[in-house]
Image (cartoon, rainbow, N blue to C red; front, side, top):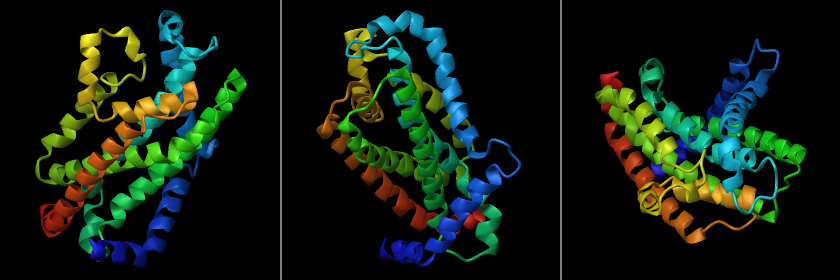
Length: 264
């Protein structure tokens, strides 16, 4: 583990420049540039809000706004977009960077670090856009928004741990790359993002205990929508699980590094 951290620190310039170059290259010939990474999820939120808010908006207690459902939906999307981006990018990371891993000698841990750095940059920009939308709608988050870094850390630890494990396994078992997007769709609808939890039967609510993303998304709703502190015990529990999965992912990554290059 210490060798990984030393290698990461030695190549910190490479990591930062890669994140910058990825951002610049992605929107090099685009008139709107980085705004596209904000407009796409916001457009998706708008579609869900327009279609479903007429049915669900009356069932969102605690939000005194005619745009209650759009606010609720947007807050949940902020957390989900961070999780899904890290998972999706880590899933094919080593396959896409196979030629680089074969031709250059560098700490391979920099690759998932670049993914996380880029995802966090996107997420911060999306957050700023969401806060702007909230202001237009007349909804202003309270000081409880200061809990967001804790929720972000919990989400990143869980997503990166799962992403590393899945990305490594995907090199050897390509079916995983086909199955994970389907599982992410199931996880999305199994998480109360586009619906409030109180509209589903109580017996089904108990199943949400099995969903590790739920306490974090609930924290995003508490902080950004209801202006209250998250259930810290649940968030810390999920963060601990995330760090354990991440530790296993790093262990697996270190053991499989040589085989990864050979398999690619």
